[in-house]
Length: 66
Image 1 (spheres, helix red, strand yellow):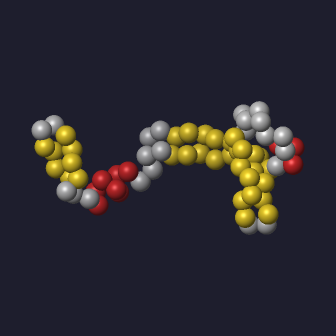
Image 2 (cartoon, one colour; image 1 turned 90 degrees about the vertical axis):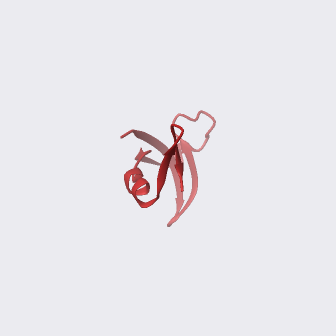
Image 3 (cartoon, helix red, strand yellow; image 1 turned 30 degrees about the horizontal axis):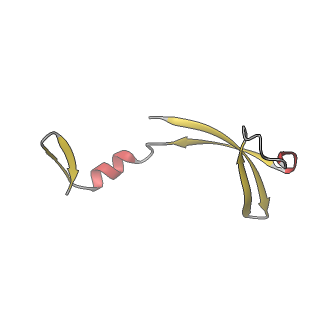
């Protein structure tokens, strides 16, 4: 499975997210005031469950959802 690791500068007002900038963004002037947040994005997370719950058929070499 493909996983992408991302890091953002985030600014919060208690529980509400006010701002999120990618860490490599040179245009963000307020990065010194922000909290650094790192997470992993799993692009295909849950794809097996999704494919099992739906019906598919192969027609002319192409998989189609019924």
